[in-house]
Length: 111
Image (tube, rainbow, N blue to C red):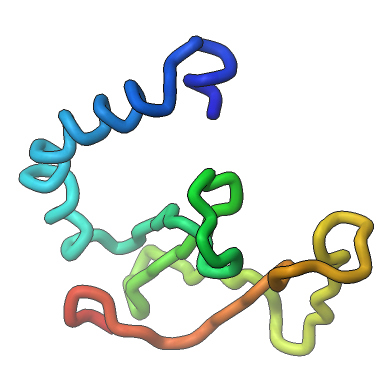
């Protein structure tokens, strides 16, 4: 969005630039995730079906447990109250406004 608004690039040129760098990403950057203690994934949303603009993103923080110098990060504490106003100030919306998950998972055969 910034490249289009501030730098005048077209969506097509941005996608072409990303695709041109993808082989290097696949060869050198992406494989490092399986060795990382923490990974932040920024992905397309699953809340809005058919969202082609990518204005709403899904973010995942994946952390290994039990590391000596690595304290876990918690989005909320046990017993916390989570509240929000879906879709800004609207009372209804065609998609959910928020979705949380905290729990164990497997990532590259690691828990």
